[in-house]
Amino acid sequence: MRLGLPIVGCVAVQDHGKGRGHVCFIVGATDDGETLIGLGGNQNDSVRLSGYPRVKFAGFRYPALPVMANPGTAGTR
Image 1 (cartoon, rainbow, N blue to C red):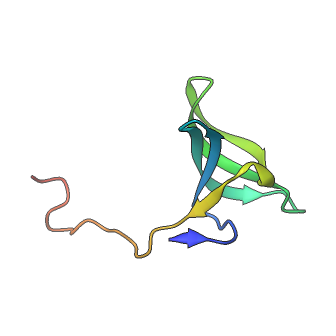
Image 2 (image 1 turned 90 degrees about the vertical axis):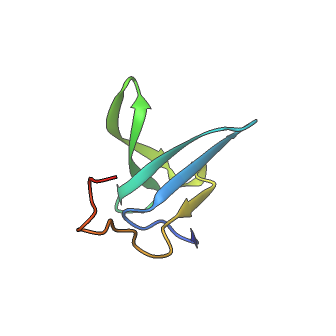
């Protein structure tokens, strides 16, 4: 679902135009809320925490309902 504001654990979407962009998981923010801390991959060939200006994000998403594997079938096909 779409969120109006970022929350910890949501997916943050940056739109760089022409079908290009970046996503990360929000893990925190600075005290003033203007910089969001995201956990993302493919940043200098690694997974890392990075700070991004909040205004750079096009949107924030979170699953409508938690998705959990059935414990009796997890890891089986």
